[in-house]
Length: 418
Image 1 (tube, one colour):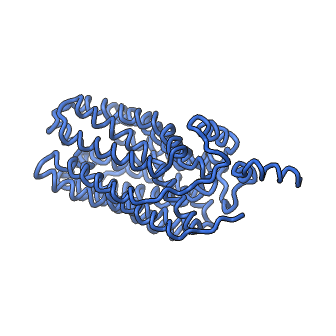
Image 2: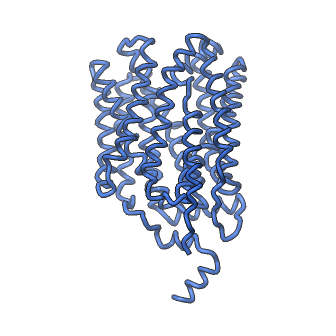
Image 3: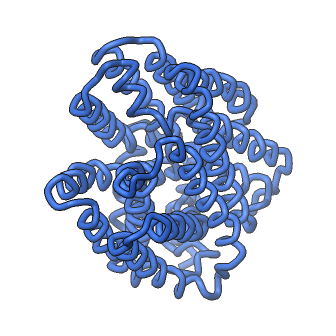
């Protein structure tokens, strides 16, 4: 029996957009290394040790906290994650020294892990409950635009606040994250029908069996994680040293970083409009090739502006395909383990970044920035290995997925009819 849509759940979508805007302003982003060096008096080695530990904590926490969300509720998990994010950012703003910063990073990493995957699961389930599942690519596109737009605003505003006091961007981001609690607190939990209430271990075991039984889900998870993972290195790792290698003034970094976020926003906006479902296979194949070619373009550039143009295009192309990979994945996954699977995707991306971060840094130190971009050009082609196994028509879940969602009585009735 088909469940009737409840349009009131559309309010959840608007509330989650506002939550995303406030938690992604990230005023600290353009100045975080400068802040930790000059205000917290840490060495670069200490900064990267703490950051690396944060990535490890997030990677270890991603899937267990996704299971927590599927077991105990997406709304309560997102509220808890927001609280931890605010505590972590506030700690970074006020606690001095290595251990103070490490404490802030610990809360921050766990809060991020609680939110990652959970926000998308709650957003998608709200769209389904409101009868708007067919609109998901547009909803996901708008979600990505909100995130990229918030980061773009933060890149400019953060620089202005840092000119007053280096700790202000962290403190202001903590306050905005605290305000976001009002919006996520106003959401409604989407009821997920279970044949019985699963415990934590049972949910985790079911998700493992589900992934093993559905290789296409693993394929789209790997594809999306690798696209996002390689693109991550442009704004957050290599942008600043590349700009410095071309003698770009520090005063321009905030504006240029804003350009990268704006390019990703436009990619999310117009990628949804340009990439049709009928041509999705072509775009999923051509996107890794295009990103790889653009990384080669950065590596071979002899002027800052050609390198920057290639970085802008990497941001746009990678963001443009994300609403569509999100749509394919969400349509393939059953509701009761959606947060777990989406957290697994974040885990794959986090592990990729954690492993490649020192590799990119080491190659940069030993051979120069150009070879770091060449490495990323090669890594950008890895999603092509998953491409042949990604189903493009996902309006109907596979038969075995539908059976997974049946109650025991429905399974028995189906067996009798057969």
